[in-house]
Amino acid sequence: MNKSNDSPVSKFAGNYKIVSIISEKAVDMNNDGIVSNDVYLEIISPYYLNESEILKHCYSFDFYYAEMRPLKYHTNNAQFANFNIPCQYIEYTSDGSPFLAFYLQEFIAYTYELTDGDEVILTPNNDHDDQFGCINFMKRTGKDTFVLNMNMNLFDFKTEKWIDAPIQIVYKKIPDEENI
Image (cartoon, rainbow, N blue to C red):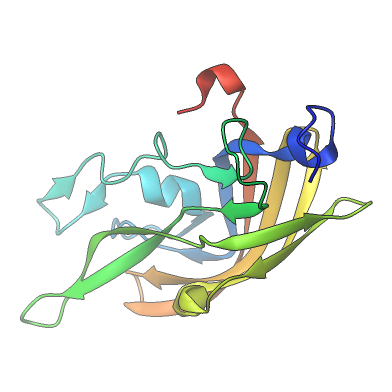
């Protein structure tokens, strides 16, 4: 890869924040009894342990970014993609009631290839993510934005079942001066 600042990969590489996650299927991920297609809002909203116990700030997107390598300070030119998508980890109480234990950071360890068009070809480097869902395709939507279309396993507290939901995640590049 050419590491010049004007190569397509150099322009694309960097850290990106999630700005939205929309599901085609409405789901209640925070146990508040309300289903929504806005998965981003479901994740950042307070989580209801029960009717009287609420956990605020259960998850924040402030420190989790997609990383499209190679970054400027890397000496390895490999084109790696780490998406760090929050995936529910559900546990069960002794009476069998489900609860959200925490979110895992998944969909990491991909390589990517830019095409002449907007599509970005992704290759997973393991099959670990299969339990959480699958990325169907990635597309650049602007100079500093891209979307992931994928199917994701989401736990719906309203039905107390896992659902396979088609979702779209929108990412926006973080300017270099704001990178972590």
